[in-house]
Length: 409
Image 1 (cartoon, rainbow, N blue to C red):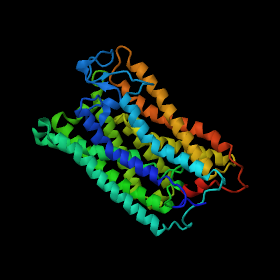
Image 2: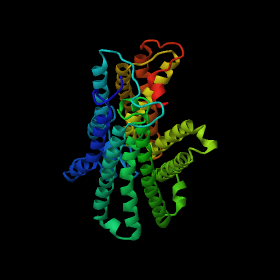
Image 3: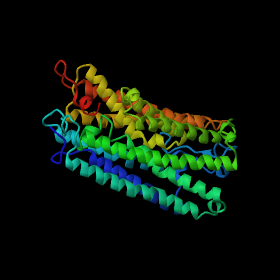
Image 4: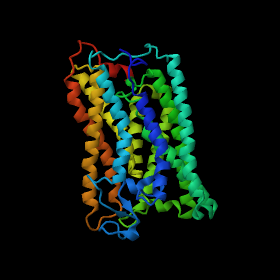
């Protein structure tokens, strides 16, 4: 049964995620202006338990440039809980709705397009619409932080300040690109987007090149600023007291990995690369996201849907090796389980993070370990939780493959 207009799809869920991303910074900034403790630029303080060291009442961070504060539940702040719920609910409810809607027939999922990979005109029109909306959101993501940063006298004081404002503002669309880019093309979500394989890949490519562009603006601007103000040697001056320097070094590592990822994608049709493109593309993408999460801790929250989707995709592959073929309702239910499992993985790491960071004499290098560890825990927990759902699916005929493996593999 194809996922078409007659049946629910996850395209609506992804659009709601885009809407949430568009509203995040305006609402966060409004709350900040009203005095709510939601953190400064991008909300990193409010999302990741960091506050002004001058107002520190805990052991952690007295001598550093931050003060770690305890969360209200499982290491999460109230702001982080609200943001996480708003961020994961569209995909969670969309997958649950699909599971219920298709549950009567246990019908096998089929591809909406032919094996030649040609997109239907409706799917191509939908992709163009999504890319147009995305471009408008990118302008908002960039223009709003740039406007209020350039209104600050610090950024107005010199060319370096203006350059830094542009580089920091470019980090906003870059962050949302990385947070949303991997979801539609995953094996656990792509077949349910209602676009067909080729249209989904076209969407991924269009947004991927935009990601590379924003990354270039952000990374080049930051590097020039650091070089002009402190010298690049500052990146390598790491110690427990100067742990914030690791923030810039990890950003450089993430930028270099994204450069490699982009070059591989650009030369994907080269004879020496095409044979290994899928495996290398997935590997470099995983390394980019891990490095980016170490660089900017809120990715541990914003990449949770991607982690859940790829955990479910890994579980689907394992189930197919055991001869299990997931129907549409079972595959969508597995995605629901994967999202809940990813949340559990995050909570375990985040609670451990709180326990460690509230102890005495915590160096500034330690906080960078937990966000990528949380991302790995999300993927692992998602896979483990949804695997029983897939392994209890009916056995498929000898020589057959599961539909999700065929569609997006």
